[in-house]
Amino acid sequence: MMILNYRATFTLFILLFLGINTSVFSQTYARNGMVVSDSEIASQVGVDILKKGGNAIDAAAATAFALQVTHPTAGNIGGGGFIVFMKSDGNVTTFDFREKAPLAASPDMYLDENGEVIGNINHLSSKAIGVPGTVAGLYKAQQKYGKLDWKEIVQPAIDLAKDGFEFNWSLYFSGRYFSAQETFPFMKNYFLNASGELIQPGETWKQPELATTLTYIRENGRDGFYKGPVADGIVEFMKENEGIVTHEDLLKYEAIERNPMHGTYKGYDVYSMPPPSSGGVAMIEMLNMVELADAETIPFNSTNYVHLVAEAMRRAYADRAEHMGDIDFNPDLPLDHLISKEHAQNLFNSIDWQKASVSDSSKFSQLYDGESTTHLSVLDKDGNAVSLTYTLEFGYGSRMGSEKLGFIFNNEMGDFNPQPGVTKRNGQIGSDPNQIAPEKRMLSSMTPTIVAKDGKPYLVIGSPGGRTIINTVFQTVLAVLEYNMRIDRAISALKIHHQWLPDRILYEENTLSPDTRIALEAMGHTLVPVSNLGVLMGITYDPEQQLMTGAADASSGEGAAVGY
Ligand code: GLY
Image 1 (cartoon, rainbow, N blue to C red):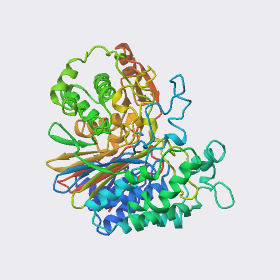
Image 2 (image 1 turned 90 degrees about the vertical axis):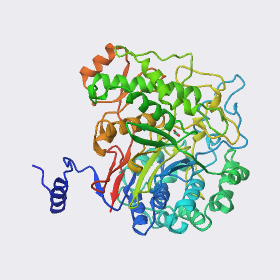
Image 3 (image 1 turned 90 degrees about the horizontal axis):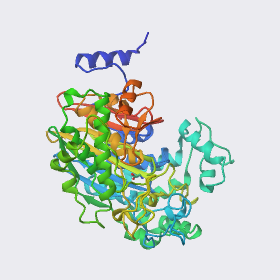
Image 4 (image 1 turned 30 degrees about the vertical axis):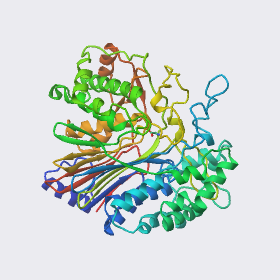
């Protein structure tokens, strides 16, 4: 029998009174503000900022800095990402702080004399490090739209780094792995205490060098990272390790405010990230296709559901592979066409309801994207919403960092096409739009998203997961809007992934019935189980009840929704 304590019983009573379904307490409810992130400590930092009078942008920036301290596999100041921001007046804007290729980068920088990629250097070497964008992006967004003083935004992260916080099991498992091997010298020492021993769960982890770096950022804002001692430390690291990021690269880095990608789904407005992310375009394409189906006749999780969703993915990812890249280097990207309802109608018409299509490999596909990214969602009491996804690319990025600075550098250059003109069935792409060029931003799949109803935030959602991000966010949006699922149920519901090439459906094991699998295979689909897809962080808002509901994906080790 389930035993409920007094507070849980009281909450249950109130929620039942309000007519809210309460069968599981994996959601958090609030009226005044909510932050959901991959670290409960970081979510609490964001809520404390809201309580101090900060808005959603203030809270998102403070949470992002805190994640650098508490969730360093992906939380970062050495990487980059995107913000989608919906203001309480209904206007939506975005910030692009994606990393850039250094000035010394070139299309063939990873190739040997035979034109082949040398080992894994586009992913794991100092030459895989792109010019970081996070500090510039958080600073630009906060200075333009935040309410609190910048110093108040960075201070909680400094406190966490300086005074320490409780080392958790996720960090311990990372530490056990890295401390036992020689390949990544910075990571070997990263989780050790002053006596050179691996910190144990429950002990306090302090990061004094990181605290100093963050103090420069607190005092000098953007310049605290791109100029002065931190910039000097970055360049010194590059010189000692054959990296190519220079002072000039750092000085020239600018975050960019861009218009969002905007689509609609049955009366809802869907806002997400434009290029250099492919996320917004591909997700809107898929929603447009699914909107054309008769959803009443397609139950969630049925054979037809998986078939429809997979076929929509196949088509959107084919477009992604062919067209997507940095908009500033590809001004003619056909964005309006790709997200148009007419294009979706043509693609939808090509779906055969009896059998799987075959991906046309004479076009292109895309190489592996790293999966260590992290997402945070924020909603404040005035109705401002932030959806922020940022990344180091792989878990712990390049696995390289400066001992003096105390943070890890990204390996985001691996998101470019490494071999011009060479496309392989394994997924490597050689098309033009995402080839390496100095100062270009590499293509991303990050899909920070805000869905609005009547001009107000209705769903704030995003996920890590490399190229799977677009699909996990798309399916969660669909689960909420089309299948009326609560946010925790939508996050934990079946996720599949098809990316055009390789031509197969990945699905979360034990979430698809054997009968459905057999039926899909009979239609010609290839199905491959994977343990997990996505680590979603979401908030929904019910304007009638004036209720915020948040949920962190159960697959996030330390994540949590915190509200007040
Ligand atoms: N590094 C993963 C992405 O940007 O999509």
